[in-house]
Image (cartoon, rainbow, N blue to C red):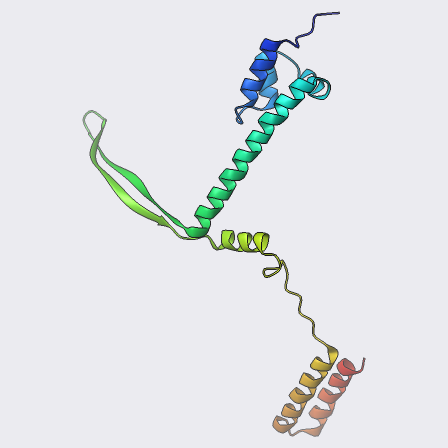
Length: 175
């Protein structure tokens, strides 16, 4: 049986790397020369290791939530920023670029309708439901159809056409 790699220096290095959200578990395992299987085995069997990993993952999640809230607030309100524009010329003889002018351009990003809708639906679902449910009773439809038909009778003078239309209306009203 070979000696275990579960040693403080390995654990410290794993926690250090895991603290950086850009590293994947796979990359961390390669860096400390253990398999992913070993990593997950330690995570499931070593309480101190598991607790340390969970603490780091919770910290990542908290940072991501905070960034998401800040970004959403910024997109809802709209924002301004300065864009630095560098104007250059190309020297035809030496083929080198030369900075001619550096200027700052004020830019405005307007509020995002999509973000506003998302925030309203998420934060106030009672007043901004996902779907509007509209109920129409048959009595309403029948009344409207009868009014419509009566208006048609004033316009259409041919009794045969009126009888055809009336027959179609009856099929809808009394199926």
